[in-house]
Length: 114
Image (tube, rainbow, N blue to C red; front, side, top):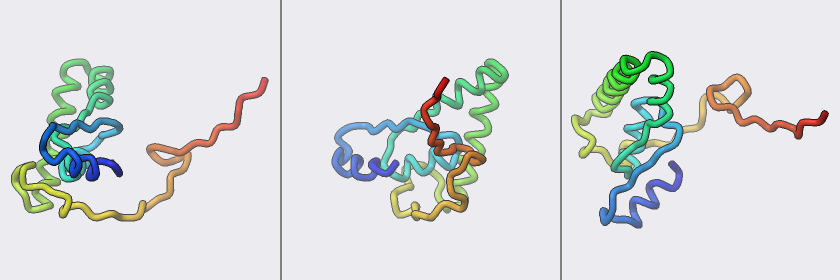
């Protein structure tokens, strides 16, 4: 995500930009599009949904993502992805530092010894 705006500026519309990696919420998708991506991958979510409930799980996951994206766009005051740009993004400090109890912890695991 940190490099995406720079890549979008370098490409300058000459190619489509696809970003993937840990996108788990509708707001993540909106951030990716606003940062310059043309397509946001959600492969991990599809795997989780498929494992949880098969085809019905994927359908429900897509319904939830659509709802989250629509709510996010509405809160930003836009109707379409085409209206988004980087002016809708504001960098903010994390509310909680990463820890073993956070959703995506940064673990420093010592080498395992027998």
